[in-house]
Picture (cartoon, rainbow, N blue to C red):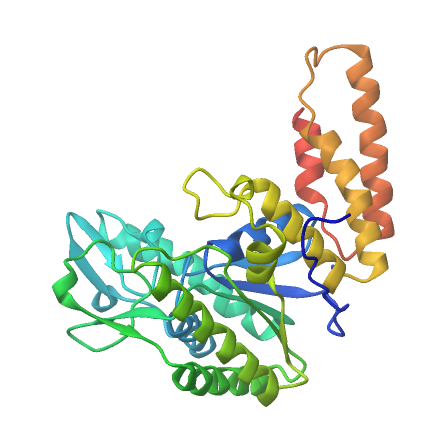
Amino acid sequence: MDFRTIIQIPRSDIPVTHSSRILLLGSCFSAHMGHQLLQHKFRVDMNPFGILYNPFSISRAISRLLKAVPFSETDLVYHNGLYHSLMHHGEFSDANMQKCLQKIDDRFEYAAGEIRRITHFFITFGTARAYRWGESGDIVGNCHQIPADRFIPVRLSVEEIVEEWSAVIASVKKETPHVRFLFTVSPVRHWKDGAHENQLNKSILHLAIDALQQYFPDEVRYFPAYELMMDELRDYRFYGNDMMHPSSLATAYIWERFSETFFPEETRSINAEWTQIRSGLDHRPLHPESASFSAFKAALSHKLEVFAARYPEISCEEERNLLQSK
């Protein structure tokens, strides 16, 4: 007897392999998936603007990267002793304007240089609730605790999101014809505006993604992370202490289902092989000068070199350096 409903997810016809180049953009859930991909040695660029929640902020980040228009001091606002970019997460803010711009430019320059090489965009929509900056009307990525009266709250419509993203997908396709978009809706509940508003916002996101799949049947796919959390894992033991974010166990399960959906058999085999090597690299010896640990290091080094030779598309330089420093 099974006491839960299992979501059937068909194997995707858009495979993700270690040769793929992946750009993840969106909410903190995209960061969770991005860290898993990085741990398994995929080629990943993750949230070059920091965490973004609404579809317009994510789409405009992509548009800015395509145009490669750098940021300047005119893009910053000063509040509470810090310089902020309204397109970026607070991790880029700084008390020094030049340091703020440098943090922004470091990530932006790399992402803009790579965007035409991206094969898979992994996009996580968090909420249809957004805020317009009162001075320009532009939708912001983060309010940075600036007083609320300087913003205009809006709820994005299905039609607005579809129109915006249709243009973005068409622009990216023009530059990279074989690019693919993997969308998901964040399983994190946005509780600030209440339970009903959260449900309305999530519903808008689902409808918008469904429409984009119909407009771009070859390029767009949906992964049901939200449904996995709400239906398969509908128990508070799968949430963190705030009762809003998925726990590490829930994230691991969603990653497992993601792997089954998008990774070919060979890719999953590589992941399993790499997990064993990474486990050895994470090992902290009680007696690092012992003969037994020297033998362990030598065996692990051999495994690493065999792995690197078998899969030349996967860089193992960082792990070689780590092993030498042990």
